[in-house]
Length: 296
Image (tube, rainbow, N blue to C red; front, side, top):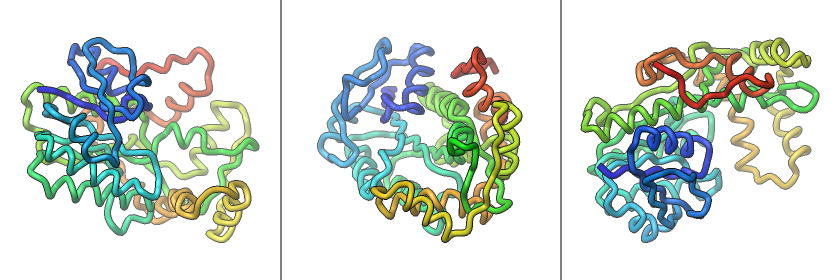
């Protein structure tokens, strides 16, 4: 089977490409800038853009299995996704593995999750088989969310988030894609929720950051008014839709939408997910090895 990965010049897509290449699988890498492709053996780069139907169709010609990483956040992201889904179906892609978001629905509090829901719906309306990998917020983001003074400010209250390591998500995606490429049909038309093994409050996150970095961290529970005002003040050129996405990161957690711990990820990995403290150590502790894969 011919495998293709979008976003291979980015973090998740790049890790997935390296995992699969290490297994000896040839890859097609559709990229807006092919020169930014990772230097991997047996990989073919093709010019590509999410919102360009004809270019995407040509880039996906002959592809059997596509791993779709989201386009960059923008007001046109949903339309770009729908264009790519249509191009994949017309190009003859048989199975689309989509990196979605935990609990994605049209009514999700986190605004960007609604785009994922629309993309999932569009995929399901085609004849392509699908696998949805619905990941939670990333632990790496949570590890670096505090400001320079060590303050995490947002309207999340005592809500919890089952954040997940990007490295574990990439490993799980690679395992899933390799299984599909080998003819394994157990992932056909399946959805998996990828979370860490613990659900943390922002006070918990601040405590872990304090303990590991040695720098005091604390959580400041903002009101909605404070959250919008502080971001509009600190980022005056940021469009309203982006401010709304940032604030809804916290309000989705307040509402309990990201608190559920799933056992899907350990099943796909074959081992327990990285704990938040492990991710923090890999970022802040000099000499702490930050491997992309672990033996299962």
